[in-house]
Image (cartoon, rainbow, N blue to C red; front, side, top):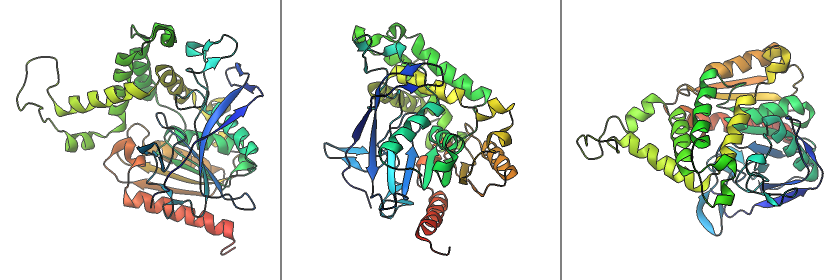
Length: 378
């Protein structure tokens, strides 16, 4: 059952936000959506953190855009694994995004012009701090759970370390405690595609009335390759030819080429290039063990939440080995940890899909969270 029509909200913050880089946002706003009802004790709130190209629009649809369905609508809603008949769910658009929260496209009050390339680099920790301030404003002192997939999973991890008293459960899906050198390399290739686009204009393309579409297209194509598994690509596209025979040119011959160009073209119409640069850098910089000599167990030593981690067998971007690494570090700290490794063919994108085993794991975990809240069996 769908949650139905939803409406985004905006909260303005007049006070400065000190960022990890040392820069400061003098004031800013966050766009967010909520689903379900907050109970009298304010104890049933769940924060859902979004991945790279997603937003606050987690579930439901908009009255004026009925086809704009939330990116995790299969996960969040009445009777769904994260059941909004039980939980009050919050989705927050991250700072630096192009979907409403303060970012490069917004006016910098100090200059009267869009921030553009002048928007400060933000990190996963910065996002967690901003989310915590929103929770304060909503009167939520502790979340029943903080949950996210991919980059959202990094944010959930950050919450468990930065605000250990403010979440009871941490749910990390298809994520990693840090990017590998290969992942950083993919991100840099994507950024270089944008930075070298003649329409980029040093990040101030808004003033020129253009969009670095070619750079965005290539960046999305590179990224999209990493989200799919080899098996999934082979099953969907194989070596199928668009015209049934080779064209002996440099246009589209193969179905996979057509698919990637379609994804790139679509992405370039709605995503902001400066935002892409910012978010991929936030991915690169996330490494909580860095301040502990590379010791992930030490980084997790202050956590107090219970954890659910889920990985997918064909996710080569954020491989199961990375989730097992986190499980070992948490077990070293005697944390309560549940772990599921799902044998699924869809690569990294599996966390967005409807695999029955995956959905069952999340549903049963939230059943336990609900029973804990309700005092069942306690």
